[in-house]
Amino acid sequence: MPRYTDESKDRVRDAVDMVDLVGSRVELRRSGGTSHSGLCPFHDERSPSFSVDAAKKVYHCFGCQEGGDAFTFVQKLDGLDFVGALEFLADRYKVPLEVAEEDPRAAERRQRRERLLELLERAATFYVRMLWESDEAANARRYLADRGLEESILREFRVGYAPSAWDRLLLTARKAKFGDREIYDAGLSQRNQQGRTYDRFRRRIMFPLADRRGRVLGFGARALGSDQQPKYLNTSENEVFHKGNQLFGQDVARAAAAKAGQTIVCEGYTDVIAMHQAGMRNAVGIMGTAMTEQQVESLAGLAPAVLLALDADSAGQEAMLRAARVAAGRKLELRVVPLPVGSDPADLVQSEGAEAMGRLIEQAMPLERFQVRRILQTADRSAADANDRIIDAVGPVFAGLGPSVMRQELIGEVAASLNLSDAFVSELLGRPRAAAPAAQTAPTNGAAPRAVSPAEKIERTFLALCIALPQPGHEALKRVTRDHFSSLLLGRAAEHLRVHLADPAVGVGEDDSDLGALMTELSVRAANGTAKPELLRVEELQLELARLDRSISYARASGDGGVSKLVVERNTVKAEYDSAIEAALEASAPAPVDHDDY
Image (cartoon, helix red, strand yellow):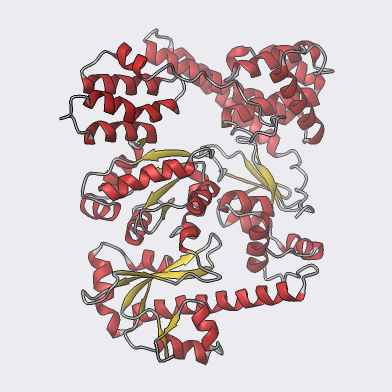
């Protein structure tokens, strides 16, 4: 990965038009001075709480607390690392990047890679032109239309066609001043035993395989004729392309996946394209059933949750189980979309419509539930010890489940299937693991930090602002109770700060490491963040709205009444919250993020 000069970063930062950049994803309106506001792209909301400062070139959301500059906006919304975001912005605003002190061999490798990427991009453009402009591609266009795929979505995915001639691409690439060795190394040609070079892909529908930034690295190609083998042919492994690293459509899906917080995983190319056409824009493909560690890592970079919508056959189900093994130990939630047996997403969208597929997506179940049900459905019950074998088979699934409602529900399913009591099945499966103690956002033992929920993020921000603004903070703490917090620890923290707001570290028991770590974190955030009374009021009102939402849900579920009164109270608080947002939007935005470490 190249290291670019600080001057290059500064030139990109100066060149960025923040309103143009954010406005390409968010509908913005001027809210005074150099500030613009709109609906946040990082979470769902109905009232605008997202602010962009055109002069300072920063953004901030008062709802979910996301904020930063142009680099962090691209990183978070498109799932890129800093270098990827820098290169993306440099390309968008036509800023040349300078590589810092690169040794000659590294420079040669980088330049060679750039040449291969340029060649692959040209090849993708050539194949697209062939699909839509050549008479020979009529059968390819017909096949895609029969699959229910429209031209607009096919063009978005840059689907193309490789003509049947032996050297059409070869001659086109040579004409563009690329050598035979470059064409071969890019995986676009191959040689026969006599040393003759010819096009690798012929009479095939071409699916470009790109990285997250949309740079074409290789191709997947589907044969059109029954006489062609294999049916699917990929670019050969080379210095640019590694099939096991690829997710088809990740460049198109990245923004939608980041906003939705989940990625839908399909098997084939047309499955992915059909899902996007149906409005499910966060779908990607694994191009087969053997999910790799690299693909799981890429999925984790797109969103924290993965919905597996693989073909409902034995191979697809095995792929789901392999995904579980590969994802073990990662902070990645896996859920399974219950596709009907013998169908795939493209078939379902075409035959039953987008709404039917959407309902199945909503019914996605935790992988553990899928595993248990699959074992119960496929178990051989003819043996005398069949029940014992089934218990042994589901045992590892339950070993990974802590105490939970889902665990108890699955015990009930196993018990009903085996005609045993819940208590006996629970005893056979052993005692469940004890619940892990509440982890801190920044643990001191070197363990990976746990994900913080949106509600908890707001609560922590509120407490940090109370520390940063002692006088209004003390008054705000008087108005909240433990009912305003989603965890016992944060409720305790609020009670502690009512007494020790001036010095949060004082009064923490020596054996209370959780509270001590939280006080340290909040104090650091208070010292480093932007503290204004308007922001504190916004956070306090968000806590009150969340408390009322929980009260309304409980009242409806229990049938105790009082829902109407709570709804009226919530409407009043919501109006106050909207006014507080307007006041906060007039305050100055946070300072730009410092990226000097990159």
